Image (cartoon, rainbow, N blue to C red; front, side, top):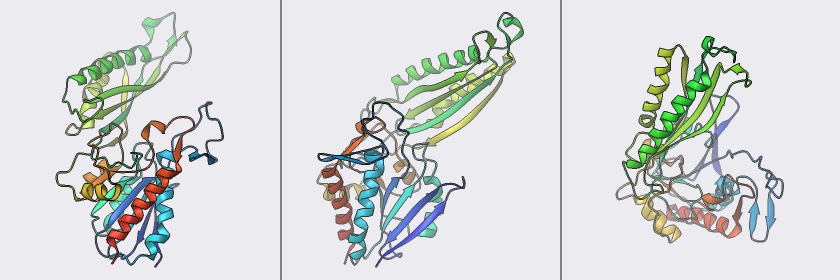
Length: 340
């Protein structure tokens, strides 16, 4: 039977999404979705090379084993079994790039989807959830703030415009505003139950005796469903642009954004995953995934994958072999539902 493989080059020119169809191209089937990229692994606490898979006991260690190469391996390992089935409806594998950089790849994949298949019945996004279906996550938006002042000798601050000082005022406002988000809107399915703001990176200045002529800061917001992530950034953006009245040049650079995943009433996909995994769906997780973008595209989406998020993005990341076996079985059982 085999599989139909489509490589979808991204606009960057050096990376691609991958789309694979097993079974008939006609008909509505399910998408098995995951991202191919991983976060860096520069922490000194790694006990072995993070990019060489190491088996110890019942675990595999390495960067991305949980987030989320393990899921991709399960999907690929299930392909021969799926291809041998007499599928009446297709199973699609959708592997994206640059999820960790702000879900940059999957929008291009979703744009191409109508030319690749009929509208899917649902998308299973295999982020680590201990193989428990998850129905909701927060949305996110991130931006880089830039302030350009006028440098000079620090002995004459009256002749310069200190970009670090100016940015400090914006950041102080942003932090106070972020703390106010704890007042609501609230959704107690999440931890914490409110939207949040964080300043993650600040860079500026050259030396202590030079008036800083340039400063940048990267911030992010995470929004509960029903709240637009972009709207949460507007008060910070307004405060940044107020600096122009004091002679500074400013710029606002959008880094990334993705919508929240909201629980879908009467989701057939949730019922299917409950049957396949034997676990009732968890209402929500606070981290974000590509599932919100699938839902935004009109596709029922749910999170379900091997591993735990607490192991991700840290040294000695691992996945248990039993978790991989359970995930592969879930994918093959999904295929069996679609077989004649």
